[in-house]
Image (cartoon, rainbow, N blue to C red; front, side, top):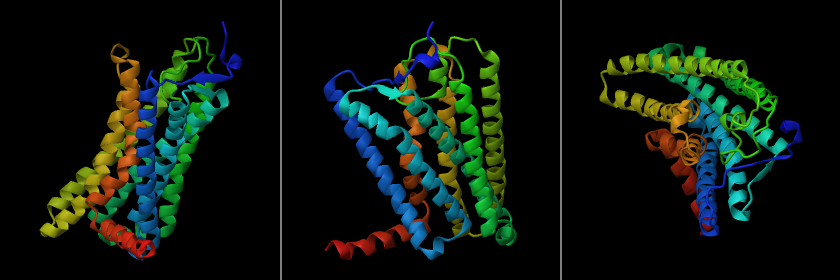
Length: 311
């Protein structure tokens, strides 16, 4: 039997068999990627340039946007190249690097969404303590903790995944390197390793999820006590986009990693992984800007500032 040390490359799953569909896939990914870059870059620029948005909430949103931009850049360019040049190969080291950065960024994003729930909880339920609890130093430390957690999580799981001997070929049934698909190639029945991986992931995911749910329950209880209709609308407008993104990320991630083997198929795995790896970074800017009047005003002002330059 061959093992992972004999592999120099993995073969990723092709999106289509015919050349026409491959080119169509390329243009679809290119459109999504360019839209994500443009939207996220506009939000980063608007927050950086508008002094009214230099608050903890927008600091965390800026960090989230940077993570989104990096996350979609980890998987989509390689998928585009594969579709354009009709190739499937990714080097062994390239696969490990892609897996590491994807885990790092997606975990840091989930942790940051948890911190953003805490930010909204303090802003709405304890507004008098907002400046004390969420000073600039505290915000930097919390954002660094999110990024640090993602880094440690990625190191642990990447090392764990690529230390398993592989003997079932090198075909990864996914358009990017993903832990469940790589572990399917393992020739050792390392149940303890897999259970340990799942326990660490479940503890982190469940802990953050419980914190987010409890925070929003308290937020909604506080919002319903606000006498002003305008005040309730403003509070909801900053919380609902956050809940939407969390729900999308958690639901697709759970389904991708915990669905029964009987329901698994290459096409279904492809769609689900596309939903949790590509869709959130692409739609997060739209979700956040739709109901946030301050951000919409900043984006409108930013876009208008470029119009005279184009005439």
